[in-house]
View 1: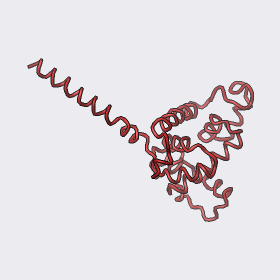
View 2: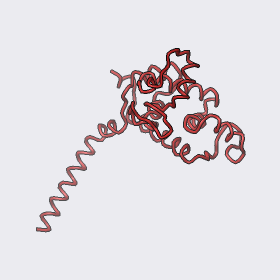
View 3: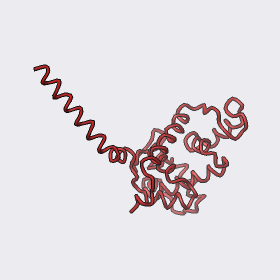
View 4: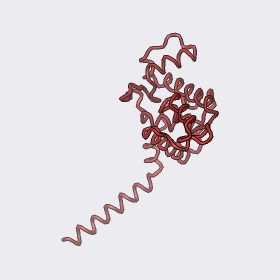
Length: 191
C-alpha cells in the first residue's frame, strides 16, 4: 500500500512539474502582466522612458490594480499621492484635476510617466537615483546625494538609507529584468 501511494505521489509530482514546464511562459505572463500596454507605450515614448521600466514601476507600485491605495494615500497604478497629483497636474497644465482622476489608468500612467521623466531630468538620468526619488521623495534624495555617508560623488547613491526605498529600487530592478526576459517585443504584444 505504501509503495502504491509513493508511486502515485511521484506520478502526480511529475505531471505537475511537466505542466509547469510546458506552461512556464504563460505562468510568467500571468505573474508579470502588461495590462494597459497601449497607454504605457504611448506615454513611455512621449516622455522618453523605457516601457519595461514603466511596467516594472506599475508592477512594484500596485500590481496593476487601478484602485490600489497605499498607507500613505498614494493612489492608482503608479501610486501617486493627491498632493503630488495636484502638483503634477499644475506642471502639466491640466486644469480640471480631481483626486479621483488618480484611479483612471490612462491618467495615472500619463502623470506617473511625466513624473518619472521630471525626476530623470533632475537627477541626470541616473535611474537608481530617480527611482529612489520616486519612492522616497526628491528632497530626501537630494539630501542623501549631499551626504558623504550615502554618496561619494554627489551624483550616485552608494547607500539608500530608507530600507523601504532601498528594497523598492531592488524590486523594480528584478521586475524590469523579468519584463525584458518575458516580453522581447512589446510592440508585437500590443497587437
